[in-house]
Every structure is written in C-alpha cells, then in structure tokens.
Amino acid sequence: MSATSSVFPKQDQCVYTSQYCEENVWKLCDHVKRHYPEELKTFYVLFISNQEKKIPLWHQKSSKREDRLVIWDYHVVLMHQCEKGTLIYDLDTELPFPCLLDKYITFAIRDDRLLKPDFRRLFRVVPGDVYLNTFASDRSHMLKEDGSWMATPPSYPCIQTQAYQNNLADFISMKENGGVGSVLTPSQLLQIFS
Image 1 (cartoon, helix red, strand yellow):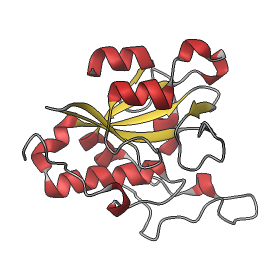
Image 2 (cartoon, helix red, strand yellow; image 1 turned 90 degrees about the vertical axis):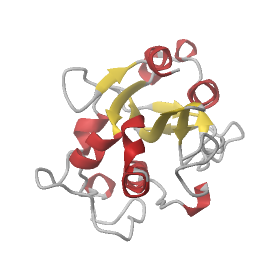
Image 3 (spheres, rainbow, N blue to C red; image 1 turned 120 degrees about the horizontal axis):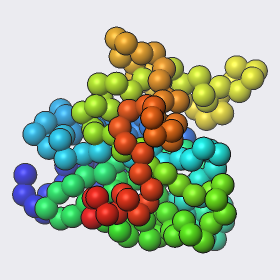
Image 4 (cartoon, rainbow, N blue to C red; image 1 turned 180 degrees about the horizontal axis):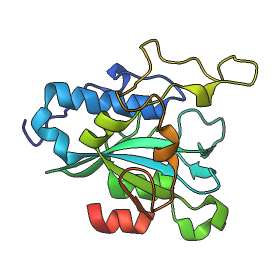
C-alpha cells in the first residue's frame, strides 16, 4: 500500500450504524484484517470516557448545536500510526476522515484544562487485533426498560467471541487496573502517538 492510499473506502461507504460506535470501529478493524492484514498491527482502538461517563466532544454530526457539541457517555474511534502520521478515523465527526491526531485533539477533544473535572476525558488504547479477538456486545446497553431500542441496532448479528457475549463495560471503564489495553490522558496520548 502506498503512503498516499487509504485502507478504507470513503466515509459514507463504511459500515455504519448511528449510536453504535464500538461496533462501527470493530467493522473498520475487521476491514483492515480482511484487506490489509499486515497493517492491522498499526491500528489502535480508542475508547474515550471517564469515571462520570460524561465526555464532551465537538464537531459531532449528531449535534443540533452550532458548535456541534455532544456529551456522550463514551465514544470509540480508530487510530492508525502510518507514514502520514497518526490518523483518527471517527465515523461520527464532521472533521476529515481520516483526521490527524493532533488536529482531532485540538478540535474534537479540546483542552481538558478548560473543563470541569467531571468532564475530563481519558482514553483506553487497545491494539486493533486484540479488539477484534476480545470485544463482545449483546447490545443490552441500548435497550430501554420497556425492551425497545434507544437507537435502531445494526442489521448484522451481535459481535461476540467464544469467551464473551458482552464485555463492553470492560472497554468503557477507565480504571487503570482493569479492562483491556492502557488508559491514557489526552496529553499522554499525544506524547506517545504524535
């Protein structure tokens, strides 16, 4: 693959279901594994959340606000370390697809020091191959008390492994001593991956 080519089709041609970012990113990783298996080691899944499960992100397509702010309980994006730099693939942003990590941090994440502590974000960084082999979701987090869906689920079956039917909470958790991968602050993420 050349330095100027992309491993993904155009953003609007990627498998996508609104409100299911963890599955959208799993599908992106699966695409890399099927089409560019030698590249998978350069991809990382980023779960963005905090202990309060209140994280502001700007430039989100689903926002009705002028500044495109959304407060999510968590969000998931794909990060790629390549010759072009470190790229972020976020299917829910209005920023470019892909977007350079530092630009994504500047415009979508913004400076944590300007936020109240309850809104400061952490990143759980999981290698793409590990995510493909360990992530599972039965989508129960998207069910209302009456059994109806908060958002229409994807048409394909739930993503599960032999070991797990649902371990989404382990990925969303920002406790450093639990879950898969490493938990980093925005500045640590930039220091390691920029």
